[in-house]
Image (tube, rainbow, N blue to C red; front, side):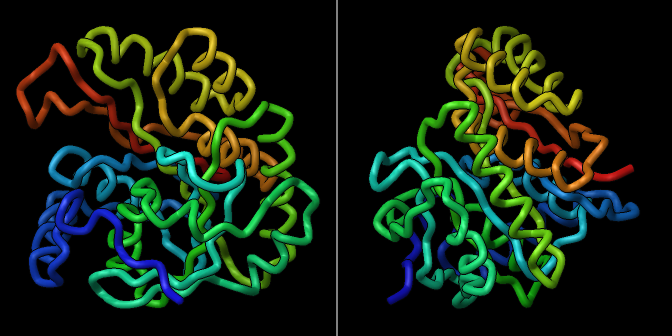
Length: 270
């Protein structure tokens, strides 16, 4: 069994050549620079016309290893709170294998991780990241996790399990958290709220990020994946974080009264 694309031809082109043209176009606009050896990253997951350029700029600036753990929010509500996919993923450019060696390590942790391919079947937050990763890493394997609402202690437990598994794994691993920022607020309101959250990320404060988003009603859909990735990155030695780029949907649509915010960020050891 393989997971079939859920949002091809909606969020991104489902035809190989058209997808290649779009992603190559995004990458061509990213200035060449020294790649960061990131421990973790954050990238948006909207339709490519809106957030593809930020995703491209974020991922092209970092080294993409052969194994990437992708953490995304569970928009659809199917499956357990921490849902792991073990089916390989069929994408327009070919099948992407799940790294079973890594999932075996991860499943040894007693933190509530459950295999649930149904939780992933219709979820877009991880899928939209995969073509960018494939373009940058031809030998890509993935570890797909979708997360529902978790308490902060549960986020800490999962982060520890990920960090421990990465330490035991015999190859480099990137953590990639998928998240959009504020939803359907004015540009000014979205920027104010998103800055509050992103300031906590760059301060390497996962608990501050978690509580800031919840206490200020910031509609950052991937707060759980980002909190987990940030906490895990710190456990793995990350001591710096930076925002690659922040924007919103109004940059494309022209509507600045009802925007969705997008941010790309990296966490690394300076």
